[in-house]
Length: 283
Image (cartoon, rainbow, N blue to C red; front, side):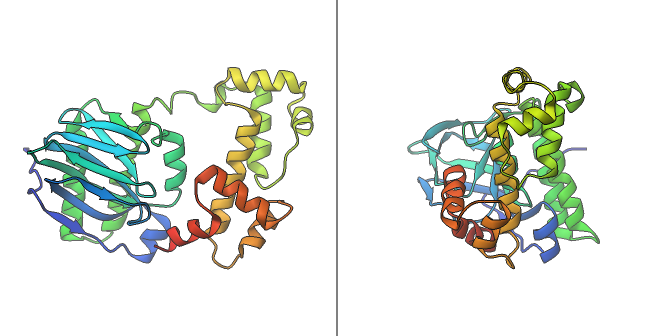
């Protein structure tokens, strides 16, 4: 069965339901954009992320102080809408990009895990898979059958899984990790808000701190401090999403001595203040 390519210069905008915004991957727009002049966007202009590939033409993507060559092939690009970005067609030529803009709970965690802030370009084994998923999403958006937003969620999940695979991020199951490392990971996961100390984690691991540090490094987990900070940051985002809590309340639940130190921690690790993060969620 042949695939039908979306028509050029055709974008469909979607208004996700409240349930989809809170619980599922959801679409904001989908289709093809034709760009003939440099197209610049500042941070926070639009919510979500933009996943796209080149349908025709050539150009560049200027994103996070890097430039990526845009051309037809197996490559797709994932762009965080929190960051400034510029789409640059070659002089005198157009650039047509196909894809979709989307959001979902934990999108920030996906950006961190896939490290797309360092490299926004992903290479798929077969770009037809992405094109097929876009066509599937287009049909769902146009027809809106019963349960269509759940089907959108599943289609985006499938495609995001391919991006994970392309970065080889699902090749080390926890069962392969050393037992002391697993003990520490489980302890931190059980209480991510706690201000963990190195010696108490070594006691939990039942080895010396120097031995635990070496095991963390050799098993690809980075440093113990980095893992603790990631866990606290993840918890901070979840708590900030609860509008019933003040920023001072969130700082207290995460065991920071003051709102100031929490705000400094959050901005250092995300590039935005807790207030800016909440404004972004509201958008």
